[in-house]
Amino acid sequence: MKHIIIGSGLLITLLIILFKLAEVQFTQGNVRMEVIIAITSVIFFIIGIYFNRKKENVKPSRPEAATEEPQVFIDQKNLQKQQANSNGLSKRELEVLQKMGEGFSNQEIAGTLFLSESTIKTHVSNILFKLDAKRRTEAVKIAREKGLI
Amino acid sequence: MKHIIIGSGLLITLLIILFKLAEVQFTQGNVRMEVIIAITSVIFFIIGIYFNRKKENVKPSRPEAATEEPQVFIDQKNLQKQQANSNGLSKRELEVLQKMGEGFSNQEIAGTLFLSESTIKTHVSNILFKLDAKRRTEAVKIAREKGLI
DNA sequence: GTCAATTTCATCCTTTAGTATGAGTGACTC
DNA sequence: GAGTCACTCATACTAAAGGATGAAATTGAC
Image 1: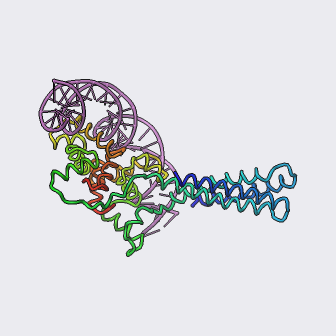
Image 2: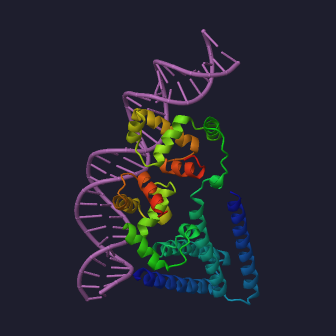
């Protein structure tokens, strides 16, 4: 929540600075239009990427899971609770488990979920413990048998 | 690859249009600087998001067309031959692959098949190469998709 | 606002997986 | 008999996975 406020503040500040800068330079006539547009492009391109990343970290949409799972009957929250209770796996752990099943390495999972490898290792460890598996391949097998993935 | 080319082309085209438009409007003096900047911002913000998303979706690249191949029932020997030929996997490699899919470690596989771990490692390496996988979990996934296990 | 659970990240360490290379043996083909 | 292939095993190495522990920030429920 704090991030959003700070981020929005910075963004607005940046916008205002950009406007004022453009205005001043524009009236003075010592800078070209293209330069301003180019700078704006780059800045907002980066902001776009960053925004997207943050959004996913805060509210993971799980497009892979949504394509196959017919989870329309119950609402998302209850389903999550149900899964968590029946297997002790949290939402994030299920995501990681999903990626494990797709054959990704810890590093790759970290990349796709925008997390550090350490975090993934922690999740994997917890998954192995909760599913009573010794290896990730075994965890995937068990998860498949239980219909988790 | 095609996407990248087309995307880049569109992006450059968009940039040029933007530049020209800005130039014309600027010299005519009938549009404000802020408007141009705002439009640029929005466009590149969206491009940033889209770019980021694309980059994510491209990552898991693997053939998944063979998920529902109709397996014809021939006698066991021919079936094995056929599978071996169509995937380059030998009989022994298929056995190891099977054990991999059941979540066993190399040592455990060696134990159940009465072989040394070295041998299993060799087989696993060959399996990974032949299935074009980087890890055993990926190999298992591919094998499952191809109906090998 | 408090508290438990979740999520995130780090470091140190051990174990397992995977790569590269070489080599011996048996079966099968030409 | 030479050549090929599958299978076996070994050594030496690098990369990845997994375990243990601590810690901080968030979140959700109460």
